[in-house]
Image 1 (tube, rainbow, N blue to C red):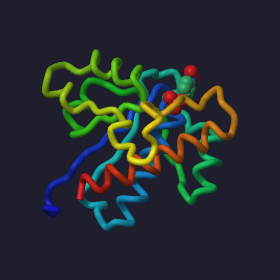
Image 2: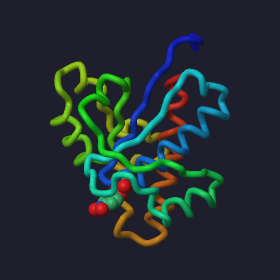
Image 3: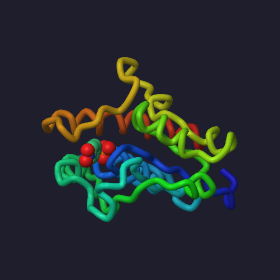
Image 4: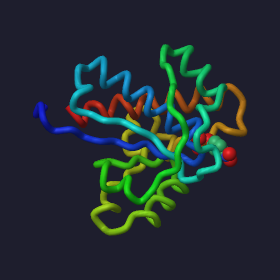
Length: 159
Ligand code: 4NP
């Protein structure tokens, strides 16, 4: 990869306290381990701002920590300017995708929006990353399983 080129990736879910900050932390760890940290910039945000400023959900943090992933993100709401800064804006589900599409100011911005499912390789039965907020522990484990799959594929595509 070109040493100067930086790809900026924003993961987006609803509250920015479960799925997208987990994707951010997982992807950052993968990128650091692959020696690409200088080339890939990662952040996350939510379409809903009600949890802004909060740490990630403790259930998500515990499940991630058990896989060796530390989550330190503070929640924030996605904003129109994010389409200037980021090259890829990756939605966890179709609701997030549609909210991002409405927020995007023009076609160039719209072309930066992806669905996380596009990067799933080993889970053909999943077309979105399910919201774990009202689920039990297994919901958080499922999110992490899906994120591991998609983040690995995304990293390969960025190589
Ligand atoms: P996330 O999960 O979108 O993966 O962060 C949720 C967090 C909070 C809410 C919904 C989903 N909520 O309704 O407050």
